[in-house]
Length: 402
Ligand code: NAD
Image 1 (cartoon, rainbow, N blue to C red):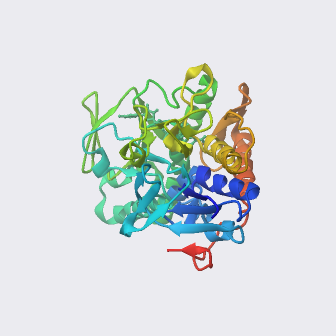
Image 2: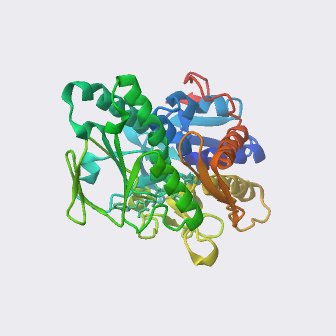
Image 3: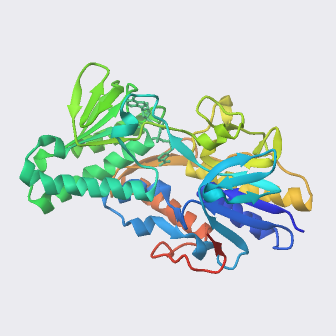
């Protein structure tokens, strides 16, 4: 019988791994099973647009059956409970188990709450299409309630963390909130949009010139930055800062960081303090080489011996590389060590603005940077064969097992 490859997670890393492996290996060479929580692939890099109402949910989720149709990849909808590397088994909820010869763990990241009291209980997070929908409907309800309740905290929006996720969300909200206000007949000046950052400035570590451009752009649209001010506690409708001040709000959205997936720690893999799996140069778990760990749940060391930020770009590259490694495992040949090629990064600042740095030193601003980000989204959709497929999805194709 041919070896079985089981891939956990159909995010950027897992999906590209499955497609690449199947491109190189025939169905007689290996079976490929892709396990995912949903029947759809989520365009995580665009969640902030959906959360603000600038893009429909359907445009950022893509039917997995439509992508893998005809490719001899079995899709299993399920939630992974345990990875048992001693017995080469993955246990899913409802007591289902999957045996593997080769396992690819591409389960993404969890939110990092830094043990801040009340944060997990009282903040929204933005890591899935469903969470984006929850944020959007909550914002809509704040504007619907305000004319009746007149409470300022309904129109006071707080985003915790001014990394890329926080800034992209703030940019989108800065454009969208005035439209919600206009629709509800509310004076735009009643809106307050705060972005709170623990570090001395926004987008810590990013190019300073671009940081200043981003800050000016967002402040000109009404964003209030509180920097050097860690959030230390969150209560129902109150955000507490280290300096003793507090902000009353009905909307606290936490974008303060990510850590590796807890399942990876629970399965006994070695991880760094942020829960990311330690891997070798071929993206394998060093003690269990038949297990590959890719995407946000793994730790990749870049130039200067520093961990690379967990980005979609890196996840795609790890997915494609692992597809090739699986081919070599099964068909032979020499593996080349994984070398990431980080082209650059672009942060969108709303509908028409962005800042980005590519090829190490080339800075981009405004519409050009925004178009570059859109182009990268289109390139990705083309790569997975999903351009124009991000619309209503079906879960009834024959290669889907439940
Ligand atoms: P992050 O860790 O990059 O940023 C989180 C921010 O929250 C940091 O600036 C941190 O100082 C701040 N913070 C932490 N604790 C705080 C506290 N108590 N109070 C206030 N602020 C606090 O996390 P992220 O923005 O979610 O990004 C995660 C990864 O995804 C990063 O590697 C990022 O580069 C990547 N990403 C990239 C893009 C893009 O390329 N366009 C978009 C989103 C995310």
